[in-house]
Image (tube, rainbow, N blue to C red; front, side, top):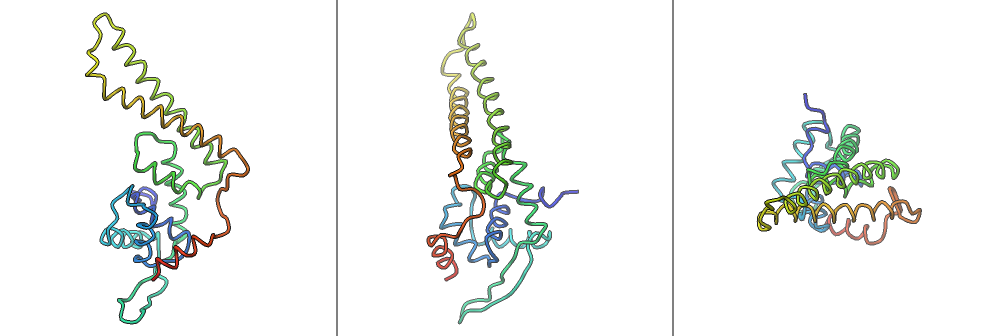
Length: 207
């Protein structure tokens, strides 16, 4: 039987994360997701967001808390995050952060990593760093062996694997630098005072 966390899609996690900020109606969610350019990661359409919200409500991760109408506009149903939904976000991020073979899921998990404690996030990302290093070194060894063999592989056949090695190396180096930044006490993490920019963004999304 699937758990609440296992039912989540990347878009579902994005929606739940928005509701950690505040209760919202789907229209506001869509505007915020687009304004924040989350459509770089997953496809965001009115249909997919409304369908996702309906699925989350069906599985008890969000709950309807009100319906309002503004002038001649259609009714808007406002949703809130349930305790189950709150836990599911954390469990999903916790599962995805160390994994190196699910790029879309990792991008969402990284965007929502601030929902976990700093120390736990550092531990999960440190595990990911080790996995990246192992995968990078494995490919590097394979490429080296292919080039140094008695009958070396023609270079054109190594292009894709060499690109993959370079991407793993870049990801590893970026993550190592991030972990260094996270260790600094001046790196803001978790809850903090809402900025004027954030409040203006929320107001624009509601209009």
